[in-house]
Length: 308
Ligand SMILES: *Cc1c(COP(=O)(O)O)cnc(C)c1O
Image (cartoon, rainbow, N blue to C red):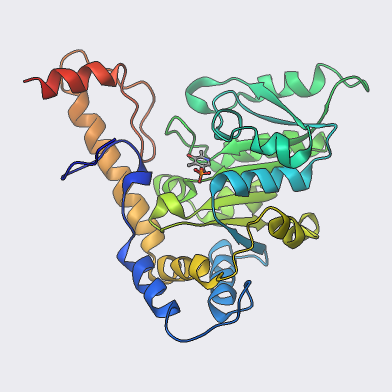
């Protein structure tokens, strides 16, 4: 796909690097530093994340969201377990079987729900339908924040899912590739959208927030993180020059750019959807609650506009 000058609406992946992340990268490149995460940038980024979430969580940095999700699920599940997520979750539709691969066979069970959000009753049905030894034992409930459809879960909705999950002995995983957009949209403190609501593990996305590359896997329950460092290394996710994964987090968190940029992206999606709705025969498919707007039959709309 050629990238033309001007705006590119396809995905947040098409954007460049935030100046704050870029400047931190530049600074991290001055002089020498120990490898494999034993450097001051990695320590600082981890501390800033603990400050942000206001808790003593355990933090690991890796390269992609697929790796973050797959390793987190791989760490929480045995091969005979199952993970429940939304039918349209990235975990199910866009990770090429990564979670199944890293768990050696954990089955993904799919729940429905409007606008990309899991319906608690459908989750309940998947868990309670069978409790015998012939059914893969549900072990993790995974939700995406903001969702693949550009909607968000409010703190109380997360708490309801977490409450159900914990009572059935399931862990709650959050795919937060766009967690920043959700936090900005909901104007809710990060702790209230995560551990206080019952999230056990968060995969916090840096890439779509404006970093060149990098995600953070955050364990709010430190016991669950035992030996996760070995998993990262085995998965090829322990970067030797870890400081370059960590520095952009320092730049974004220290300056507050992580939230400011997410707010801006959300406002732009709202503006875009507002202007599109004003055109004849254009329908927006899901409530625009974060930084994405889904348009029905966008291809014909683009053809119409460009042929004029
Ligand atoms: C982009 C994205 C990811 C991570 O994708 P990678 O391409 O592996 O970095 C994970 N979850 C969701 C919902 C995403 O949109």
